[in-house]
Structures are given as structure tokens and as C-alpha cells.
Amino acid sequence: MIAEMAKDKAGAEKRCEEAYEKARQLQSKLNDVITFVNPKEQLEHLPEEGKMRGVPIALKDNVNTKGILTTAGSRILSSYVPIYDAEIVTRLKAAGAVCIAKASMDELAMGGTNLTCFTGPAHNPWDTRRMTGGSSGGSAALVSSGVVPMAIGSDTGDSIRKPAAFNGIVGVKPTYGRISRYGIIPYSSSLDHVGYFTRSIEDACLSLEVLAGRDDRDMTSSNRPVEEYTKNLNSDMHGMKIAVIANVIDNVSNPETVKIFNQRMEELKARGAQVDVYQFDENLMKAILPTYFIIANCEATSNHSNLDGIRFGVREDGADMKEIMTNSRTRGFGPLIRRRFVIGSYGLFEENQERLFRKAQKVRRLIVEAMDDCLKEYDAIVAPASGDIAPLIDEKKDQDQLSDDYLIAENYMAMGNFSGYPSMTVPMGFYDGCPLGMNITCRAWEEETMFNIGKAMEEITGYKDLHAEVK
Image (tube, rainbow, N blue to C red; front, side, top):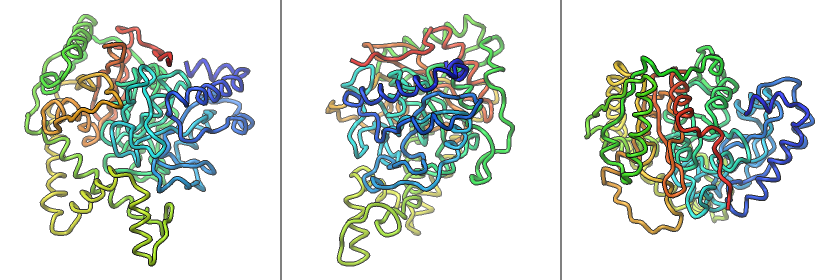
């Protein structure tokens, strides 16, 4: 779809204006946009050629955009207008992409619901009573509702891949360092990945070709050459070895999810793939979420220490500097963020670092080593991206966060952030009118293998360019 749009130079203006107007029309139902960006000025400065020339896109609101409000979904940044563009914005502009919206997100990208944004919750296009998932839920909803064919997200634990499952679209987290993070408001520096949403594997390949590459302003970005992912796409599964995570399957809450997933695995076998059930150490699987929680929140506490109302952020009144900082952070952050900063600060206390933070780093290494052992034998690790469809926003459900279905089935995808390996969610079926997703994780820099498996699944399901009609 994106390639065809880019070739249609005459239709660029109409296409982008229609996307902008559709986003505005759906806002009352989806609430998936924080700031609308009129495409008119961008259309006047389009390059003559480009892989995304005249293609409307959306950016998660933690992506810095020069002269355009960038809030990261937090009240404390509700007046922040950057003076520079993130590297990915520069690359998208060079390719001819046109941003029409800064999308809703969980506050400071901390969360998996998209219910904590200071502008209110984002709603799922397939059923507006349901959540989009987070933290990149607004971007996912804009793609899922057919407003834009591609939107940028960020993924620290599963913040692209879980919303992709809930919204029935493709969600890509490439290898750590594949895409520059310069100009992205951070959450956790060792876990953060820039990624994106599309409605087809071809568009996912093309998007990575545009976004990937070395950036000297991000020292974690790789010098590795960018492959021709679109040209190399091949859905032949003969010789492909796939490991299904038994621990996830055993703890999925909805039996229909397992039924659909198993059916898809049989169809991959019929196309030539070897599909085996693989058992990870159960204790390591249960340790993924607490390990993630310690590392992510300790790093976030450090990263956001400048949001104090003095150096940065909305300032609240106070009798002295200490009171100003206390008032600014108390009123500027939502309750979930404040709790996470308390946990992060506790973990960073000198007397706690070895007992908590360093220990979590060691457990992270054990989990990655277990993944490596699996990927020595298999080309990919797969499992349902979530145990069920998107939860209802108003559902008062006290989920046991120490249960195996929560610890393992709903949070295992942080493995991809611990390792930095490429990981992608694709739609695999529907239950009760809402989509379910399958996650694919491969070895570092093997995005091509990941895309090939995703393409095979797309051909099996017929879910290319799947989008919701918002009711």
C-alpha cells in the first residue's frame, strides 16, 4: 500500500488531507490523538522522490517534532514544544512522509493500557468499549482504523506488540540499535526500541528500510548495513524451524486463543515449517515481569529526574525550590508514574542497588541466555501475543498479578527487550469480533526471517490491510 501511494504523486495532497480529516472525525470516538498536525505546509515541501512520498503517517507523542507540541502523554510536558526533530522524523521527511497527528500514549510510555494519558484513554477501533493496549495505543488505533498506513511507536516491554495484537495489525520492534532513538523521550534506556505499526508485511519491510541506519547522535545505533527487506521477502517455509513457547500456551486464559494459535501452527507445518513445542525454565519465565519492572523503573527514575518544574516541565508554585519541585512532580505526574518513580528510587538507593537493580540485571542475562539456547536450534520463537482480546476499559477486574497467566502469558514479550532481538506481532484470528495476535521473535539482525514468517502467516490468514470500521 505505501509503495503504491508513493508512486501516486498526483494524489498526495488529497490523500493526506483526507487522512487528517478522518482522524479529526474519529477523535470523538477513539480519542487516539493528542495533537493534530495540519499537512498543508509539509505538502508544500515534499521531495521529488521518496519511498513514502505523500504518505500520511502518525507519530507517538514521545517523538520530538520541531515546533510541534510533544507531551509524551504527561501533564508535566503539556506545554513542551521541541526545538529539534528526532532522527526518525528527519528520515521520514526525507522519504516524503507527511505527519498528520501526534498519537496518544500511556504517560511517559509507562503502561500497557493507554488509559493513563493526561488527555484520557484511547479506544479500540474494533470495539470502542475496549482499550487499545499500550503504551503505543494511539498509534495502533490510527493504523487499525484506516486513518494512516503506518505509525511510529516505541517498545520497552511490549508497547508496540501488545497494541498490535489488540488492534489486529502488524507491530514491529526491530533489533536494538537498528533504528536511532535520538530525539525520543526515553523510558528505560537499555530496553527502549523505536518501532512502528503497519497493515501489511510489505509495508513493514519498506518502513524499516526508511527508518533503519546509523546515527552518530545515538551511540547505541548500529553501523550494520540496511538490507533490502522488501526485495528479499520470501514466504516459503520449507526448512524453517519454529519453537512454540509451551509455558505461554499452558497459561493462556482463553482456550479459543490457543485453538486459533494451534490451527495457525498446523498451517505453517503444511507450508513446510518444522514446528516444535519448547519448554523454558518456568522460574525464569515467572521472573521476566519483576526483572523488567526493577530495571525499567530504575532507569526511568534516572532518565526523568530533569522533569522537576525547574529545569524542565510545567512549573507549579511553591515557597522555595524544594516545594516547587515537589508540587510540580506531584501534580504533573499521574498516580501510576509516581508509584513507579518511588520504586525506581528505592532500587537506586546505594544500599539497594546490589540487592535489587544489579540482581535484576543478572536475572536478565539468564533469560537472554535461555533464549540463545533456543535460537541455536530454532529460527524463531513464537506464541500468542496475548491470552485474550483487548480488555474492556471500564471492566473492574482485579487480576492476580502473581498468577502464571499474568506473569507469563501476558508479559513474556519483554524477553525481546531484554535480548534486543527483533520481535513482531501479526494478526492470527478473531474472537468475539475482536482480533488476536501472534508474536514472532528471531535472532539479532534477522528481521528478514521474521518478515518471511509474518508474510507466510499473512497469506494463511488473508489479513493483509485488515482494518476496522469504527462504529
